[in-house]
Image (cartoon, rainbow, N blue to C red; front, top):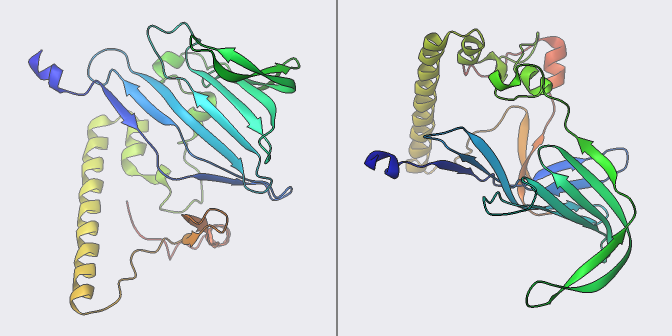
Length: 265
C-alpha cells in the first residue's frame, strides 16, 4: 500500500497549439484549442476519462466567437456529469445562441430572443439572463455497437480507423508492424516489434543530434528536419507557427511513387 500511495492515480493530458478548420466555399476560418483530458484510475479501478476547461472557438473571418465550458466531474456536484455549456457572440459581443449538453451524448442550440441583467449567487453577482426559443438538436452520439464493453467502448467509426488500405504511403501509421500484430492478437510479437521501432527512433534522434552538433562546430547553418508533405509557416491571422500541407501526397499516391518517403518501420 505504501508503494501505491506514491504512484499516480490519474494522467492529465494537455494538448498545446490550436486547431484550424477552413471552409473553402464560404471562406469561414475557425480556430480553437483542446480542453484538458484526465484519465482516472490508472493504477487501480476502472479507467474513465474526464474533459474539463474552456474552449474559445473563433471565426477568424467574421470575428464571431463561442466559448464552451466543460465542467469537471465532482462527486459532490448535483449537475449533469460531463456537462458542456456555451454562448455564441458576434464581433460586437452580442450573444445570439446558447449551447448546452454533454460531451459524450448530445449538444443543443437555442436562439436568444431577449436578455437582461440578473442576480445570482449568495453575493448577488450580476449575470446575464437569456430568454430563448425552443432548443434544436445539433449533434447526438450514435448508439455503440454490440459488445462495445469488450472493445474499449469504441464507436463503429473508431473501430474501423486502423483498418489497412491499399496504396497508401509506407509511412502511414496503419503500416506499423506492431499495430498489425496487435490487431491479430499476437501480443508478444507486437511487443518485440514495438521495442525494435523505439530503438530505431532513438538511434535516428542521436544521428540528427550528432549532425547538428557537427554543423555548429563547423559554423554551418542548421536547417533541421523538413517534413515531406508539410511545411512550417506563420499564420497571417494569428501570428503563430503552424504546419500547412505543401502538396504532393495525392499525386504520389496516384502514381504509386513513394521513392521520396523515408523508411521508418
